[in-house]
Image (cartoon, rainbow, N blue to C red; front, side, top):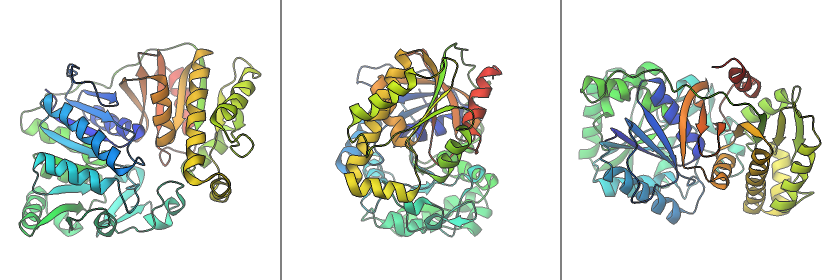
Length: 423
């Protein structure tokens, strides 16, 4: 039986959480989509189910999340982690609030701890406000996100607009006093009728405190940072033995390719850096406003590149270009065209011998793994915080799925160099 059952609202977020758990000694399996009712539980300490619900209609996001919950509970999970992005990506309609409300009701949880902090990647929460590095969330570039623009850094307000339930705060000073103080604060808020509590955290030390404080909670909501302290708390309770090293992945011969759909600042810088060493092609949905023709243009280009070249195909664009595309095609249609094109490109590249694939962007990653029909990933070594290499046995493919905001500027070249070095 797994100790933790996690439900992630996108594929890269699930991989991020799985990597954190593996790095801290918990055997972890990532499943892509809700497993069927007759599926046997994986032999693991934690099972992470990745959905594509971050920007789905609210009713579908809730239904998919409850279906994942049913499967995880049937497998005996002690606790549930609803994994959301460390930048709390959502709109005023959801989907974080509606899904958290539905899971809370199903689990009959008194109060739900909520914390997206991941200090290693520059995401911190102080007095309920989310920072990205030294900038407030709404001044970090996330205010220009094409699907979930974040224009308010106050998470109590952000979550409060998504739920009819009361939202409270466990502030920095309380977290500094330790796990018992956090538990007491949560109990007090619950007694006052608060359903969701934002937890401050500005350091890994505080995440370890929170791990101990919330280890017995039936439901937590947050980023992968919350998982930093959970395995240690499980060991103190006698639930978890000592873990081994992260899974060693097979070495595969074959071509390498990078597909970048994210328009985050981090991915834009990574694309710019990689263009110096890769054969690169920019997708232009205005020139080819249909997924099939857009994909065909990229596939035709790829077939004319040297056999030993690493392929970089990207739709990553600065905000003004994104705005122009959305104005011409419509926001939802523009996103759908690019996602479906990347999915078709990935399938074609694998058919042509690509065995090492990096995908940047949560929505892009979700579209790719869905098209490839993947159901399970073996988690391997971490490239940068929150992003591991994985192995997809169904396609004999090494795969790195990167959240748009994650990774150093040289992420793409560093990731491929790891495989050459046999990491």
